[in-house]
Each structure stands twice: as C-alpha cells, then as structure tokens.
Amino acid sequence: MKFLYKVFNLIIQSEIEILHLPKFNQACGLNITPDIEVSLGQVPEIESPNGNENWNATNYFFAKDGTSLTLQFLDVGRFLIQDGRKVTIMPLGEPSVGTLSTFLMGSVMGGLLHQRGYFLLHGNAIVHNDQAYIFAGESGAGKSTLAAAFSKAGAQVLSDDVSAIIFDKAGRPWVLPAYPAMKLWQDAADYFDIETKDCHSVVARENKYHIPYEDIFCQEPKLLAGLYILEKKSENFSVVNLNTIQKVENLILHTYTKRYLDVMGFADRHLKNCLALAGACPIFKVNYPHHRHCKEALMKLVCPGLEIGLKTEEKEEKEACHE
Image (tube, rainbow, N blue to C red; front, side):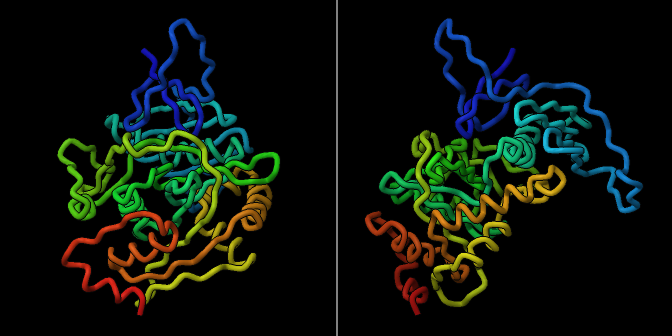
C-alpha cells in the first residue's frame, strides 16, 4: 500500500505512513505523477570523507554534489535524498512511525527542498488580509506559541517551524502551505486550552506535542508581506526595521538546514535569494521579554484588525511591553 500526501504544494507518494500530513484526495481513475517518492531500501554507509579525523560516524550528512544528499541519525535511519524528487529510507534499529515522520518532515525535507531551489526559513507563517507574515527565530524563541496565539485570534496558519518560499517571474516571494500541525510545549497548550491527550509527542521532547489544526490551515500559497525576526534578549518590547545588510545577515542566520547548502554547492544561489528577498520584503527585528502577553503587542502591530484577548491575570501586566 502506498500513501499520497500533499505538502509544500508537492504530491508525495510514500511506502510508509507519514503522520500529520494531509492526505491527497485522488479523483477516481485519475493518474497522478507524484513530485516526490519515498521508499524503503538500502542506503550505503558513508565512510570518513577525505580522511577527516573528526568524522562522526553515527550522525552525519554528506553530499558529492547538489543532486544527492545522505543523512544518518543514530537509532533512526539513513536517508538518501536525490534530485529533489526521491527519498530512500533505511531504518536503523526500530524507530517508530512518529520518529521517522519527524525526521522526514524536518531535516530530510529540508535537504530535499533545498535541492528543488526553495528558500527555507526556520520560522512559521500566518495569514492576515490574504497575505503571509513569517516569524523566524532560533529554537525557543516562541514561534509556535505566537502562531497559536494568532490562530486563537482568528488568523490562518500556513506553516509551523519551516517556511518555504518561492519567487515568481516578477521576483515576488510566495510562502507555500506546509502541513496542518504545530509543535507546542505542554504549558503553551494549557495556556491556549488546547488538549494534548491524543497528540503525538515530538521526538526526545516528553512535554512537547504535535498539535493538529486542520480547521485553521491555509492550503493556498500567499504573497509574503512581512518577515519578523524574534529575539528574546531584551527587557523591553521593541521593533527595529532592518537595512539591507542586516536583512541578509538575518536571513542567512535563520535559514533552515543551512549546513546542507555548502556541501551541496548551493551557497552562491542562496546568497542571491537572500538579496532578492531582502529587496522584496520588509524585515524587522523584534526584541521582547519572555512574557506571552508581549506577543499581543506584536500581534496588534502586525495585524491591527484581529480581536486579541488576554487572560484576566495578564491584563494588568501588558503595559510592561510598551515601557
């Protein structure tokens, strides 16, 4: 049995089930040529390249050129990604379906989308007034919590954790729909009254869960209207409009699976895309304290029309974000 899914506007045909992806509804009698094929098979082990004494034989990534990338994760599997169209999985040990799904839709998909020429950011994307806004940042910056807050206020969500961008012939950036699930810590889920009892946990994160959100998932690409870089390194809330050099620096810093670009020979192409995106979209650096009510200030700034409510116990504290 083979499974059909749609993610990042691509049709995936897979020999294994991939959790959290929307099934692709194939019309009766209609022949579909998948964009990506995922199968089980043998993937050759990579020996230390060029006699590198620091080679880690348990977890690695390696590419001879831009058409082939091999990833290995201990106790998970070895993955061969070819031409942005084919993924071969060789499980190592007995990983669960959830574990394989997490790695497939994370590091493996990152490598595959780079091969296809997509621009990837470590961030989520929401939709307001039919346009996309991306919130990028390092792990722990509060990206998923912010996406949950936007969704509770009535916004749609395009992606969580990884945002994929393509450019049209006019050079305009479009954000592609990912899949309808976000990763939330238990305390954030509790804050937004989201039930996690039947949700799969994120690999190696006992209190973090994949939360499905089919009802607020946007399934169409949207033009990117603004990009916000989240920084939790300030006592006060502030938003800074970046210049071109700062934009490029931050785009490079927050590129998803950036480490694959050099080994596949895509560094020059990526720099050109960074410059294109810097010229096509306003980019801001957002400094804010570690308080959820500060997210309301950012939400109001980005989407003034949304009706955003705070919990009663936080209303008296929100002014701290504006001092």
